[in-house]
Amino acid sequence: MAMPRILLGAASSGSGKTMITCGVLQALINRGLKVSSFKCGPDYIDPMFHTRVIGARSRNLDTFFSGEEVTNYLMAKNAAGTDISVMEGVMGYYDGLGGISARASAYDLARATRTPAVLIVNTKGMSLSILALIQGFLEFQEDSQIRGVILNQVSPMIYPELKEAIESRLPVTVYGYVPVIRDFVLESRHLGLIMPDEVEGLSQKVQGLAKIMEESLDLEGLIRLAGTAPDPEYVKPMVPKAAEEAVIAVARDSAFCFYYQDNLDVLEEMGARLVEFSPVSDEAVPEEADGLLLGGGYPELFARELSENTSMLASIRRAVSSGMPVMAECGGFMYLHRMMEGMDGVSYPMAGVIDGEAYRTDRLNRFGYIELTADVDQMIGVAGEKVRGHEFHYFDSTSCGDSFQARKPLRRRNWRCIHGTENMAAGFPHLYYYSNLNIPFGFVSRCDSYHVRRMAGGRDGKG
Image (tube, rainbow, N blue to C red; front, top):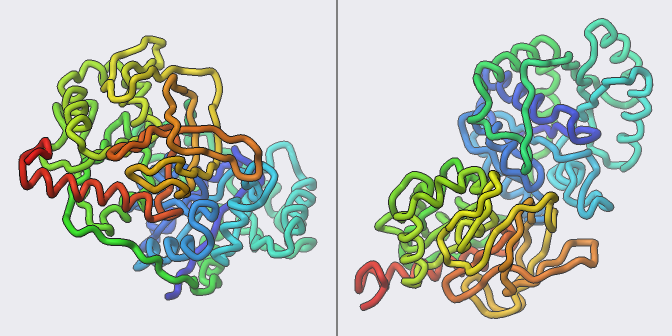
């Protein structure tokens, strides 16, 4: 299948990748193109901004999580039926595993998917030195994939001279510039950018960005560059199927919103039916639920509201005690604790499934990619089973679990984590299901069994 695509990378974080990506996406849509988008690496929030722009779920692509072949499959699957795909890079273009490897970097994604890359260069405080920076990125790897550059925060007065200097001395095309923009500043909080719904007038601001991009970028040139990308090559992975249609209740609201869409999609491909509910505002777990999926997010910002919803907390406790399978990651794991500290410094009663307290710290804990190995047989895998994921949290727990051994790639650091039982997997790590499809299938299979028992003998699974 033909798949026109480009990757927008940058020399470093803070170069304007998300802002420019959103503007380019909107400008392409305004031209009548059907657009798909991707975010490189383990990021939940940037794809939410993409999603608001393109009106369809943006996806993540990560060579550490899924390897080259599956990454190409997911790219092709999620780009099917669109005219052009735009990928947003992560951090600096070559920044990958452990901070010491280019593996899993934006470069690695461009290389693995054979996607032409455009380097966004923040020119603030530079003039001719921009050429040295670009030359370094072009020459650091022979197959850099960098075919063009976009100059950010540059004056339209000096841009023509910079463009001529770059193109006359370096084997790269300048696809335009972005002037200093003060009307689209994305604020941050402790896990990254604020959420799209918190940006006042987001749609209008993105349309304003698109207008600027139309005037200052060579969009026709970018579209032509995307058209030079070769067809993706891959073999579709074999996805196991469950015998029954189990219903998995997915916590989705302002407190729980961190999910990889491909994780959710593969649960459905395995035969599960997903229904959403809100631990903040609903009274109980959905009646038809055969399993619970509690993702990450910002429960610490809604600790009081979650604690005051006592009917939901009681419903969660009953469901888990009845044997209903539950997967809980990071924020969802914190919600299952006996107590959880909120951002206001107050500790609030929570679901009480985990006998421990989640508490705030002043730094990121166990940040980054991890490979997990099961130490015991449990719901999501037998002893020795491996899965990949990442951790990213300022909170910690007095009871992190000990069913898995986590190891940071290219580092010696390791630790035990996750409460793993016959019907539960709950811990700080965010798991990426395509790194080992046996892991989510273990969950779906247990939900399947619970569904059969529930149909035979009532909600508590007893016949």
